[in-house]
Image 1 (cartoon, rainbow, N blue to C red):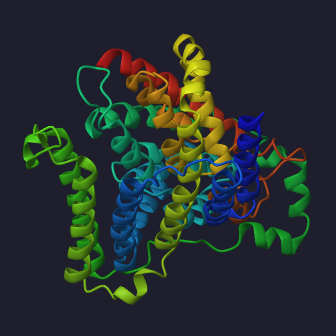
Image 2: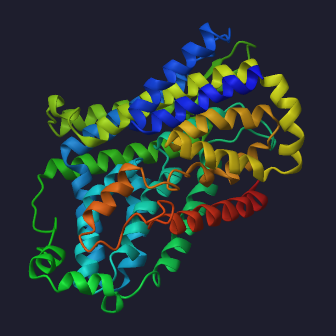
Length: 449
């Protein structure tokens, strides 16, 4: 009964926290930790400091990149591709947003693309819901493929000491699975989206809106584009500096010999951890961009990438600390009751990860909360890598900022929340993408590891 009450406290904090977004989720988790500690006598666990510092370094670099105009340069290249092939917008739009997230490490870069995707679709008489909804889903799935995303660096840190395949699983092994898994997940969702919903000329609700001249003018409106904008050369420099940092991170992960070795507690030499290597490279890249591109440091904290990153840190801090405190105290009991189920039905790990992701509205927070528990319960590290795409489960309810923004940018009203809430525009592309990603991930792990 005591365990049930403690678990209820955690769930209530998560449910209440989701009403206030990522910041509220992290802060309200403090209530849960306080109740567990002062009323139930649960000894507080250890906050995920290493993960939080890595997130901080990555967000710092990405924020300077955005201030320098590097993100806008990427957006213009993406728009040029989409406008050259407008008939394939439903396929190209999600692949573009997935790629942008892969390069930048955050799905929040998608906001600038929504009005462009909408403009191309509506001018070609393509139902905007088709490319826009799957583009929003793809921007979040790309997080699992980016070497500088919160969830990837978190999982690399967690798996650094996990041995189950003859060697520790590093960033290269993880990305060799997560990149194709999320890519094919996005592709499957995009192919399905090509025929979703009625064509605009056969949609009575849409046609009724066109009868009102003001509504018609609002729907078709003026074109949103970045092609006519001129960026300073420093914006291009910032982009290449950031790309160079990503390449260095991948090389350091692929070749441990490039990292200096230090003696551990047991006296054995081991290479510098990738967590610290990522932190160093991101700090250095941010500094180089700031100096070379003459970025006004006072403007860095005003960008949406910086704000979203700070929210992610608070969310990871509160949620992971609270959940770690509970699970560490009851670990033996949970291990005895769940080890058999997880061992005989390892896919249950993916289900739990998916559900927790929805509760915490963050892939990074879900990974930090669930992956260590999975390892402690005996889940094969290879399966944790295979089911990495299941960390994206917050599309189930249309409450995530990118989904809400997508609905707002679709002036035709085809991208929407259904009458029963759950039947919204993102649910099926999300399910298709995650399931396909997990299947591809499991197949690749079986082949590669």
